[in-house]
Image (tube, rainbow, N blue to C red):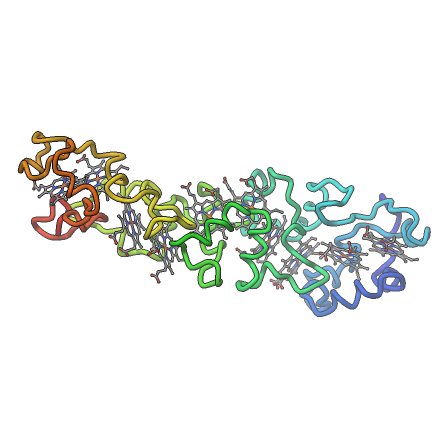
Length: 277
Ligand code: HEC
Ligand code: HEC
Ligand code: HEC
Ligand code: HEC
Ligand code: HEC
Ligand code: HEC
Ligand code: HEC
Ligand code: HEC
Ligand code: HEC
Ligand code: HEC
């Protein structure tokens, strides 16, 4: 056995008293929970066998697993210590997840010897955006999901341990993720707007935008990405008042497609074919 024999937490705490005291209130130190480290090999359930280390008064680190991003111990090896107990359904997609692939360690987010910030809804976002600085910037834009003050958090949408969905989303598709809270956008509608049922992100950013309602562009440009609205041949706009080619631009500039096509997510009105009511 690397590190020699098991010596027990009492021996470790002779030299690491503070670490011992700190962990006592946590779930890991509950001796009456038979699954917990303190009902098993104590400190060594996580840190590895400590005989050589203890006998050498801390000179030898043989067998000792040091945790954290700066540890000389490889991330996979650190994480294996934790996954030994935590390879359950919640961590089913950890292997190969973006965080695993980026060599994150469990302790990049979790603290074991102190109250664990990331588990508290009010602190979680702070932990995530220390690395995700681009997302942090998005949260400060004019329109944003109410994430900054913890009304909703990153993990309402993302699984930090990996998921079966795209972009570590908890649901299998992006739209299903949105329907979780915006169920009214799912329909079914008598008159659907194709991109809405396909991809909310055709028009919306998830975190923040400088345009209202998290839009990726302002209308009419938003609509014109997909709709080449041209002169008289355009079925809905045959009236010459609507000269989409450029003459009368009052319906394009200032006003927008939405003035008429207000039911952009779909319509249940019998005559709502053009999403206008
Ligand atoms: C006789 C004293 C002594 C005993 C007993 C002892 N250690 Fe240590 N330990 C040290 C010293 C000294 C260091 C190096 C200085 C430091 O970082 O605190 C160290 C370092 C460590 C580190 C790395 C800290 C770091 O920041 O790199 C870990 C983890 C550790 N010990 C865990 C244990 C565990 C687990 C046990 C029980 C199996 C144990 N120690 C028993 C003295 C001891
Ligand atoms: C559930 C796993 C686990 C258990 C049990 C555990 N530790 Fe740790 N320990 C960690 C992790 C993870 C870190 C990295 C810093 C943190 O999370 O607080 C760490 C950090 C340390 C450090 C290094 C301190 C530093 O600042 O880097 C020492 C020393 C240590 N633990 C000693 C102990 C001792 C002694 C015990 C038993 C009383 C113990 N640990 C029990 C997981 C554990
Ligand atoms: C010997 C088994 C064991 C090991 C090793 C272990 N844990 Fe745990 N852990 C548990 C048990 C048991 C619980 C309590 C689960 C519960 O109450 O449902 C727990 C709880 C947790 C929690 C939730 C804490 C809370 O307050 O709700 C986190 C986070 C966690 N462990 C992370 C880790 C990390 C990170 C490591 C590796 C550094 C690790 N665990 C190593 C058994 C273990
Ligand atoms: C990117 C940050 C991050 C990393 C890395 C991470 N976690 Fe977590 N973990 C969280 C967050 C946030 C929660 C609470 C919310 C949730 O589960 O969605 C959590 C919850 C937990 C819990 C308690 C609830 C549950 O899911 O059972 C355990 C146990 C846990 N993590 C273990 C681990 C282990 C083991 C690793 C390493 C393989 C790890 N975590 C890596 C962020 C992280
Ligand atoms: C220690 C730094 C760090 C922390 C903390 C962290 N992440 Fe990450 N995260 C990364 C890295 C590195 C990647 C992979 C590269 C990338 O996509 O940026 C990543 C990837 C992701 C992805 C996947 C992006 C994609 O393109 O598929 C999501 C989603 C994510 N993180 C969410 C979170 C959440 C939620 C938290 C907080 C619970 C969190 N991260 C905490 C570093 C971190
Ligand atoms: C309302 C749901 C939701 C919340 C809350 C959320 N995200 Fe996302 N996130 C998404 C969606 C959806 C995508 C994919 C966007 C796309 O591909 O068009 C995404 C993409 C990402 C990506 C990939 C890179 C990028 O910017 O597209 C990262 C990293 C990320 N999110 C991190 C976070 C972090 C960190 C938080 C918390 C501060 C967070 N997310 C909160 C839904 C959410
Ligand atoms: C966890 C719940 C939740 C999820 C999941 C969610 N949202 Fe939201 N969304 C909210 C909340 C809360 C608001 C704030 C407005 C309110 O109170 O209704 C909001 C507001 C919005 C707004 C209006 C923003 C504004 O500035 O007016 C848009 C657009 C939006 N969400 C789109 C999406 C999209 C697209 C997705 C999927 C990527 C999504 N939401 C997923 C909870 C959620
Ligand atoms: C074709 C572009 C487009 C697509 C696709 C789209 N939206 Fe929107 N969405 C808009 C526009 C434009 C607004 C602002 C005008 C308004 O209030 O109707 C908006 C506003 C919103 C709002 C805030 C106002 C309200 O109606 O509640 C929410 C929430 C929202 N969208 C959610 C979603 C969700 C969820 C999806 C995917 C199911 C989605 N959107 C797909 C264009 C789109
Ligand atoms: C991502 C591409 C995309 C975007 C962006 C988009 N649409 Fe559409 N829209 C479609 C598709 C695809 C259809 C269905 C096929 C068609 O009629 O061209 C459609 C159909 C329509 C229809 C006709 C509905 C019917 O039942 O015949 C209207 C009206 C419409 N869109 C208005 C808008 C408006 C207004 C916007 C901007 C807020 C917009 N669209 C943005 C792709 C898009
Ligand atoms: C002044 C009101 C008005 C404005 C502004 C307007 N539309 Fe229309 N649109 C209509 C009407 C009315 C119809 C046709 C209804 C019908 O044929 O049943 C229509 C039809 C459509 C259709 C369906 C055409 C088809 O082939 O069936 C699309 C797509 C469309 N408009 C897109 C747009 C876009 C994109 C904009 C902004 C650049 C826009 N509209 C601005 C009133 C308007």
